[in-house]
Amino acid sequence: MRCHLLMIGISLFSAWADVALAQVGSFSQRDSRYRLQPSDTLEIHYRYSPEFDQTVTLQPDGFVALQLAGDLKLQGLTVDEAKAAILEKAIQRLRDPEITVVLKDFEKPYFVVGGEVANPGRFEMRGTVNPLQAIAMAGGFKAASAKHSQVILLRRIGLELARTEILDLKAAMSPSSSELMTDLRPGDMLIVPQNRISKIERVIKMTNIGAYFPIPY
Image (cartoon, rainbow, N blue to C red; front, top):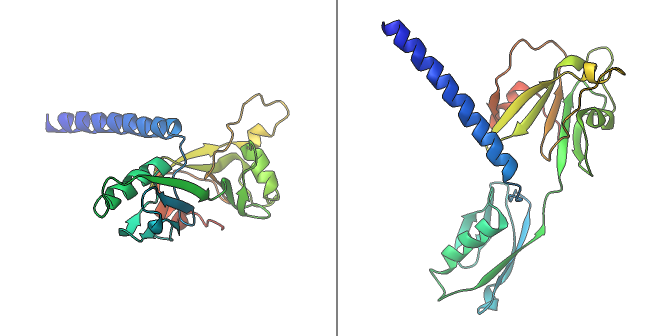
């Protein structure tokens, strides 16, 4: 009886995890607003206190140094969310402040191709790019070692997680193939393995990707 209940519990947890993962993925697709990253530059204007106007750049740890509020972490926020966070701090020093936050410089959309390709690296995304085009931009597969049928696509589903998908690009390259390939999204990573992959986690932490695959930058 205990064993039976335990199996039911495991099945329910697995179903819940699948639903949660689907929800996370759908949320990330709907939320298309740009989120701040290190090296992004913001201009902050105070309508009634222009002496506090400043231009700030997000540091590698995601923080900015504000004259009025000191260090404030803005990484991962939209511009509107960053404005609200700065305003919350400014209210502690100013009476009824009005501010404008403008994104002046930001990281251009890119994708990464690594593994068994001629020129692994990071590539600027200009227009739509599918996985085969991305591989071509990276110099193509290494003929002797690339596992064409198990190319790994890593796609962010949040600040800390990435979803994995195995792409059979060998089949996609066949003249008789009618399969439609999904276009890459900014921040996607394609990894061409050397050996056959027997198992891969559906979701992995972004901080652990380097341990699984060598990511070129």
